[in-house]
Image 1: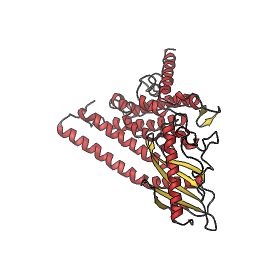
Image 2: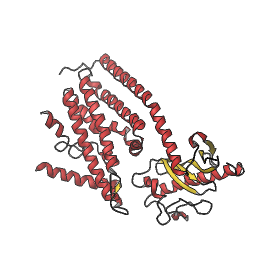
Image 3: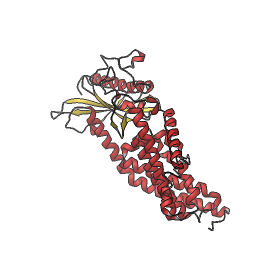
Amino acid sequence: MNQMTNFTKGFLKENPVLVLLLGMCPTLGVSTSAINGLGMGLATTFVLVMSNIVVALVKDLIPSKVRIPSFIVIIASFVTIVELSMQAYAPALYDSLGIFIPLIVVNCIVLGRAEAFASKNNVGSSAIDGLGMGLGFAFALTMLGSIREMLGGGAIFGHKFIQGDGILVFILAPGAFIALGFLIALIQRLRKV
Amino acid sequence: MAQKESTFLNMFLTLLVVTGVAALALGGVYTATKTPIELAKKAKLEAAIAMVVPEFTNKPGEEAIALTSDDGFALKLFPARDAAGQVVGVAIESVTMKGFSGEVRVMVGFKPDGEVINYQILEQKETPGLGTKMVDWFKTNVKKQSILGKNPDNVKFIVSKDGGDIDAITAATISSRAFLDAVTRAHKTFMEYKTKQEGSL
């Protein structure tokens, strides 16, 4: 596939959250507000791009039987780098995202793309795949975060536009599932168009 | 695409190299970010103190006094002084382990007589959208939510559900109880310290 398709597939056709249904845990847990969703999405995008590049670079040097442990060490290293950098240079975001930052390591999308794509393609394509998938993930998380923030608190990106409380369930886990379900249904409909 | 054979030696060497390089990279990043992280923490502390006490001319962060609460928690007292050296307020870093997800650290500013000026949440891992509301719930002047301007000596810093005078966060009673626990601990320890100092800070 050409690089344009490679990049854009992460948004709609093969959106990791809404179509491939990967990385559900952080999607549901972090999307309580738009900015949290965006921050998490961008952090994950960085890890995805870097780990895809490194995996594509070393794919021929790693024996098949130890590829998963090797990929995990590579991914975990980048996640730790993101965590330390956030703690040093974006402490407010670090406090908001909390435990979900180290959990990027076990985000299925990262290992999934390393195994399904980066270990079988060249560096350039892998980097673009990582970027597309990561931004698609960020897009899904920001959308879900916005919906939950608007319905659950009457705010968007921290700006309250409705006084008083929103529909509390959307800030809680059940609301996350409900909103996500509708979002997936919407994307399925759009994909058929 | 040729891949390396999965012989024992190859696997051993690969894992050795991968983990070795990772360790080096992480060690490097850790060292590089160590100072910025400490600076960020210090800046957060000074900002938290400035938020909860009136204007001061000293550096409260550097005048920290270590206190121990009745139940053995380590608290810190930061005196805020005016130009004449008089204490205009006291910022106390307090803690509770009764949060929904464990530890909650609070910075509470008291007037010398024990009245709450303001507070700032330093660390918490409460449920987003619920317990995390403690960040501004108890500052909001609605019904009996706010603790600002109230003195635990006169007002019961306990949630209404338990017979107290403060309204808990809707659907986050445990977090609310934990928050008030931290504040009362700070107040109690401060008052005890004041008595020991015979009124002069």
